Length: 186
Ligand SMILES: [Zn+2]
Image 1 (cartoon, rainbow, N blue to C red):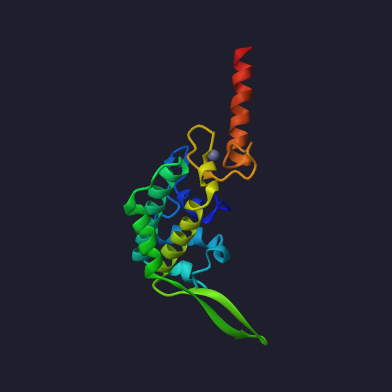
Image 2 (cartoon, rainbow, N blue to C red):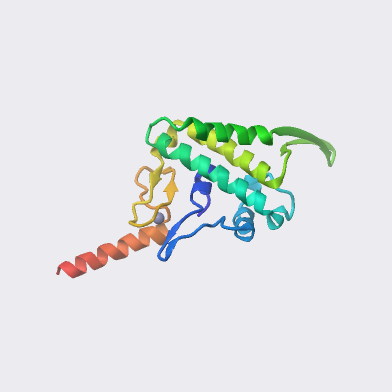
């Protein structure tokens, strides 16, 4: 599940599957696979770095996910987030600030944001930045949890009628359930 605002993608890394909650960032190998799915959007890792994460980097990812969750849950319901969660987001950005690095490339200067720090610090800063943008966006209160029963995925509906995290999986499951419900009543 990717393609929601980056901070929502991060909170969606603990999907509820038929056999329980899974963690897509459980260890360095899993986190590497998840990060490699949208490298340009995340944009803070060098080539192959997603495959060389340390336990410390994974712990940094878990910490920032906890902070994003702690802030997003109240804010999406219009409530005040814990000060500790906002502090964690701000501290993460401060630990690996981005500069617009100017480079001469093929006859012209290009500029792209470059962060300092370890891979875990850079990732935490990137997700914290994405979270700050999301939390300050008035649309944050429209974020919904998937309507399909045990599913806990969040999404930002661009279409107000959207009810499922994924039309293919949860939307289909709901349609099948409705079909059997009707069938049973006859
Ligand atoms: Zn769902």
